[in-house]
Image 1 (cartoon, rainbow, N blue to C red):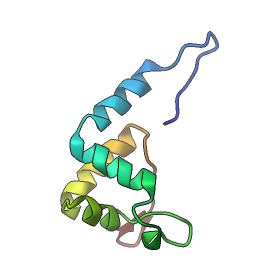
Image 2 (image 1 turned 90 degrees about the horizontal axis):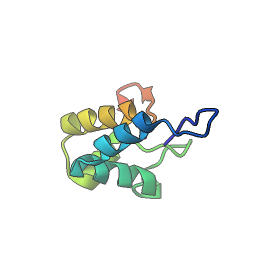
Image 3 (image 1 turned 180 degrees about the vertical axis):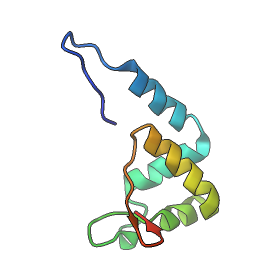
Image 4 (image 1 turned 90 degrees about the vertical axis):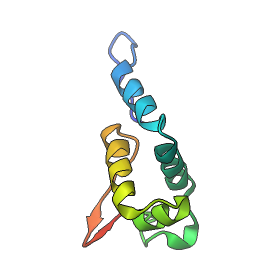
Amino acid sequence: MPTKVSKDGQIDRDLIVDAFKALSNKNRLAIFEQIRMGCGKAELDGDNRLAACAVASAVNIVPSTISHHIKELRRANLIHCERQGQTIL
């Protein structure tokens, strides 16, 4: 999680609050953990990125729902995504 520190050493608390809000949902926490752990190295692409559909199947969430959760994790700057065709990595 990127944090911004001001010149006087203060951490941007808004970033931390956003991260905690995003991770307070049990599904988003499970998704974040799967992404963090790599969700099975066999499912990574050539650049060591994990497809969203692999995460969805690992946490037993339908793709339409996982899309919403991934959006919230991205908004909180916890993950970064890239689209390749119809696949989100």
